[in-house]
Length: 267
Ligand code: GLN
Picture 1 (cartoon, rainbow, N blue to C red):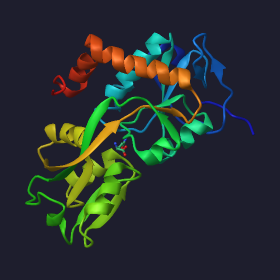
Picture 2 (picture 1 turned 90 degrees about the vertical axis):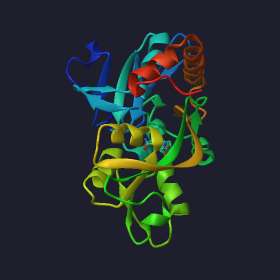
Picture 3 (picture 1 turned 180 degrees about the vertical axis):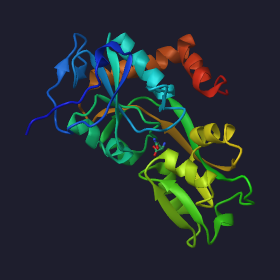
C-alpha cells in the first residue's frame, strides 16, 4: 500500500498549516538531533479535532487557539514548523491516529483518563475543566433532572458523553453529535433541550450567543493533557512537559491564556 500525504500549496511557508485527507497509514519517521521522532521531517505534526473553540478552531483560513499556541511553543523549542491534522476525536482518544503515524502529538482539549492512559502517553496536565450544561435561553432547566422526558446533546467519544450516560435520568434521550459545532448549534436552535460539554468551550460559545445560557457545572475535576504514541516518543513528551512547566513559570502560559480566554487563569 502506498502512503501519501496531501499538502496545501505553499504549506512549507505558513507557520501553521492544515492538512486533511491523510492516507491514514504508518509513516516512516525521522529523528531530530535531540532525539524527537517525527512523522514528517522539520514539522511537528499535530492531530486535533475541529472545532473546539477556543482550544482549536479555524479563523481567517488558519487553525488557531489555546492548544495550537501551546504546540507552536513546543515546535519553536525544537526548531520545527507546526502542521495541523484535523481528524475525528474517536481516533485521537483511542490512540489510533498516533499509532497510524498520522501525527506526532494529539492536542484536542483531551481529558486525561485512566482508560486513555492505557493507549496514549499523556503529558503533564496543562488545563483544568469540568462538565457544564448549556440550554436555550428561554429554557427553565438548570439540572440534568430538569431534562426528564427531553433530549440532551452529547459529543461522541467525550467525557461529557460518559458523564451524561452515568448521570442523566433514564428518560432523557441522549443525542450524539460528531463535533462541538453541531452540538452548540443544536442547542442554540432548540433542536435539543440541552447540551453537555466542557465548561471552557460552552462558556466561550455562550459569551457570544445570546440564544443560549450555561446553567450548571458538574465538578468532574478533569485535566487536559497532550498525548504522544504509547511508549513511542519519550523525547517529545519531555519537550512538551518542559514547555508546560517553563511557560507556567515565565508567564508565557498566562499570556497565551489571556489571548484565548480574555483573562488570566484564576488562582
Ligand atoms: N475534554 C473532553 C474529552 O476529553 C472533550 C474533548 C473534545 O471534545 N475535544 O473527552
